[in-house]
Every structure is written in C-alpha cells, then in structure tokens.
Image 1 (tube, one colour):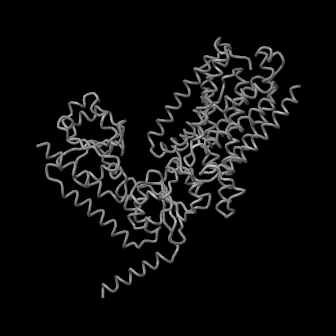
Image 2 (cartoon, each protein chain N blue to C red):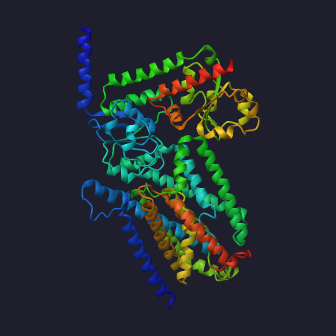
Image 3 (tube, chains in turn orange, green):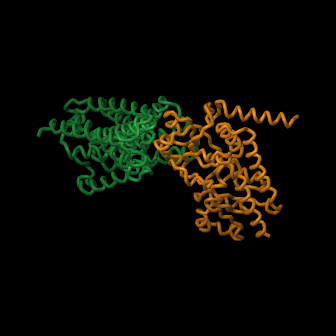
Length: 291
Length: 338
C-alpha cells in the first residue's frame, strides 16, 4: 500500500512540475517565475552548467560561458563570453527561455530588461550547492525526488572519500593554495568545507574569510603537513623566502592539481565528490610518504 | 575662411560622422558585420538592433561626447593642453565613487532600474569632484603644468588604491570592478542613454554660459579679472561641469582613457575658434571618436569582443606620446598656449 502511495505521489509531483508555472527564489531573494520547463538554457557560470548536466538536462543548454568545460559534450555548445563580459547580443540571439547567471554576473540586469528570464544563483559552499541543485531542479521541472537522488549520490561520494582516509592521513593539516598571490582556501571556503567533512585540519581558520590573502610567513609558522596547490603556482612556491624550511616542502608532501582537477575542487557544484576523492588520494599518498 | 564659418563646417562634418558611426554601430554585430536591413526581420533580430545595438552605439557616442566636453573645459579652464579628465584624477575619483556605491549597496544594484543608475551617476560625480579638488589642492592651483600633472597622477594612484582595497574586501565588487576598469559599452540601455543625454545637454549649456570667461582667461588671469569676468563663480561651475560629465560617462561606460584628451586637441588642429565653439566641437569629436573605436572594438576580433577602454588606451597613448614629442612648449613648465 505504501509503495503504491509513493508511486502516486511521484506521479503527482511529476505532473505538477511539468504542467504548472513554478516560482523560485534567486540569490537576491527575488521571486523568478518560470512559465514552463525551459528547453533552451544559457548558463553563465561553470558550476551552474554542471548542475544542469548533473540533473540530466545537458542537451537543453544552448549556450554556456567560456569557462564551462564539463562535461566534454559541451564542446559543441556556443560560447557566449564570461562572467564579466557576457555577450548580450549573442545571448539574446540564442532565444533562451532561461538564463542561469551568478549574482555578480555583469549585464544580468540588461538581459532581464530585455525580457529574458534570468535566475541568479551563486553557490559558494556545500549548503549553497544543495540549495542551488534543488532550485535549478525546480526551475528545470525535474522532480524533487530526482534532485534528491542526485544530491544523495554526491553525498555518498564525499562520504566514501572521507572513509578512504587512513588514520594517519586524517591527522594531517593542510594548506590549500588557490592562486599564487598567494590566496589560500580557509575552513569557511568550499574547499575548506570538503576538507572539514573528511575530518582533516586546515591551517587557515574560518575567521580569516573564505579566500584570505596569506602572508607567506604565516604558512612557514603554521607548518602544514600537506600542501595542495594548482599547477600554475607550483614553480613560484620554492622561491618564497623560508619555504625551503617547510617540512612539507622538504618531504615533497605537495599535491599539484592540474587545471581540470582544480576546476573540480573549486567549483561548488555536483562534482564535489570527485574533488573530495582527489584530495583523499593526495592525503593518503602524503601520509604514506610521511612515515 | 572666418572662424564661425569654419566652425559650422566642422560642426556639420562631425555631426554627419557621428550619425554615420552610430548607424554603422547598429550593423556591427557579435559575429562581425551583420547588416540589419538585409537580415531576417523576426522579433529577436529587431530586439537586437533596437534594444541592444542602437542604445550601445548611441551610448558610446554620448559617453565620448561627455568626455570630449570635459576635456575641452578642463584644457580651457586650466590653460593647459594636457588637462584631461584622467590626468586630473577625476576618472579615478569617479571609479572610487562607483566602487563605494557598490560596496555599500551591493552589485545587485545593477538589477534595480534606472534610479539606481542615476544614483551611480551621482556617486561617480561626487567622487570626481572630490578628486579634482584634491588635485588642485595638491598642485596649489593650476599655473604649474608639471605640478598639476604630478598631483593628478598621485591622486589617481591613491584613489585607485582605495578602490582596489574596497573591491578586495568584497569579492562581489571585485568582479564587477574588474569589468568596469576595462571600460565597455556592452551594457548600455536606453535609460542610461537618456541619463547621459540629459547630463550632456546640461553641461553644454553651462559650458556655453561660461565660455566667454574661458576666452578671457586665455589672456591671463589678471587681464581676465580686469575685464570684469566673474572668475570665481565660473571656476566653481566649470569644475562642476568637468566632474559631472566625467562622472556620468564613467558611471555608464567605465574607464575609457584618452578620449577627453584627444578630442579637444583634434578640434584645435582643425579649427581656430572661441571656447563656445570648441566645447561643442570637442563634444561632437569625442562622440565620433568613441563610437568609431566602439565599432572597431566590436568587429576587429569578432566574435570575441575587445573592451573599448583597452582599445582607446592603446590608440590614445600613442597619440599622446606623439604630442609630447612634437610640443616642445610642454617642457618649460609654463604650459602651452591653448
């Protein structure tokens, strides 16, 4: 009986989402009305692009920003500029029925003024990622059950990554460098949250803000066990004064992430489980070398 | 040929050039040249031409005209051929105004309609006024070219640093400012055009009212005073005109360099005239220059679009260098003749 009831509820939800106009809240707490499930979507933020694809609506994307590079099938989709220089004319010419943009995307109001439906969402942390997945799901007319399933799958992945850590790996403290300025990822950043969920320490406390500009001396004093860094800033690192004395540098407990891997780590989107797995592999490797 | 006849021909020529470039701008699309008169005539194409290309082309013209006017007034008022909205620090001040405005109200202000755009103009105006006053204070007046330029550079750098600090503290502002610094006409709407047009008319009228003061000023300050010219009130109003026109332009098209410097220079080399004519012609010249640059920036690397500020900076920088090498009058520190 319960099973039968669930099925009916599912059908009802499906029918609701397919047939009726939906209203969703964007990041500015504005109510955005979406008349019917959109079929022509333009996304101006990689994590939103990935969210759409994770919900199985990749083929509905008719335009993406120049940084959206996953999944590979997007290579065929037209590019419409970036977050600070979206090409308004190109976007309008694509006749989208939904434009997904970050809150800070320039020109989003222009697009709205030109009569397009613009949904502004900018996931910055794990909670945001879940909220955005749900909101985009509602906007796309995906059933709530499907959105929940996708989210659960992601969470299972993160959990599995956390469980794959050896006790030694877990006991390490990490310095994650986002760019060579150097900006680091603190506990309150998306990356920091992933690390925290795996039970690993971060040398940058949440009080410093999500991506603080770090004094190199701070890192030397904090002596992280593992350094995680993007491909681009690896070379300059060895030349920083005092960094040669870092134990992590001496023992080569450094994980260098390629650009494609960095994308996975920094985007607060549906690939967070893969990001967690990458970090877990790094931590296990470093712990093995540390012994 | 007498002055006013020369001026009339130049006026006609520049008006025609401006109209032609704005019309050309409506055919400069994201994929290179796309003539609307031969293309499909569905709703979307109509919207692209009427609501995107036309306002941005017109906006580029208006923004250029505002900067050209600001340049002409500044060069006349400071009796200095290198005075320009940028070199006086007013553009950095306007940028600081914009940054502060976003910092306080958030970049979501983009989404809030025309009165927010007006607020942005006011913020940019206040920033520009403060920056010009600061420059004048540091330079102890306007007589010394070198001191004025140095003070302008210092004010520009310091205010730029403050803007950077504001944007560093607020990541959302950082991204918006980054785009803003490049200078772009891509987001100009009809409401922005209307704001800029109103400011342009107001500033032209005010400039015209005080043009005779600038004419008298070319004879030197004491002579002007003995002619019974209201110097003090004229200075106040004209500094206001420079700041308001720079502020309005910067608030809508971002930082676009050198138009304000080059337009009056070009006008001077074309026509010898009174300041009233020079202001009008400089505005038209600035408009024509920026809309030409905007069309170029759109089609040169299409479908990739070049920010027009980058384009004018490269072209204008070259022009300025040429001027500096040619004008030996700039080296003696007394300022060239206007």
